[in-house]
Length: 138
Image (cartoon, rainbow, N blue to C red; front, side, top):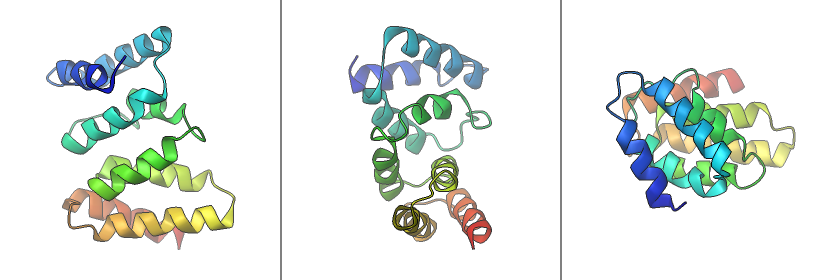
């Protein structure tokens, strides 16, 4: 499956009444089909483009992406935050920070959260989310 296929499938369910339910069905299908790391970037780009969608708490898409922890997910998440921080991707970064014990990596991730908070590409929700997480980390 290509990145374009992933993006198309996400766009197809965007207007569904129960996006969180439909995204759970979609990610279940991806798991069965063996879709892997190639879905991370297009899913993050979808989240960047649609920051106000109710993804769930944190939702099936986040859980799917987190399957690729320490397989490239973190770097792609940081790239997404540099492009277009959202409240959801700030939350995702916070989850990575909370699971990180290595001091140097943790500092790098916290610096990325600070950058997201002050990014001109971030909307108010993203800035407020990043600020909340940074306050808890202090």
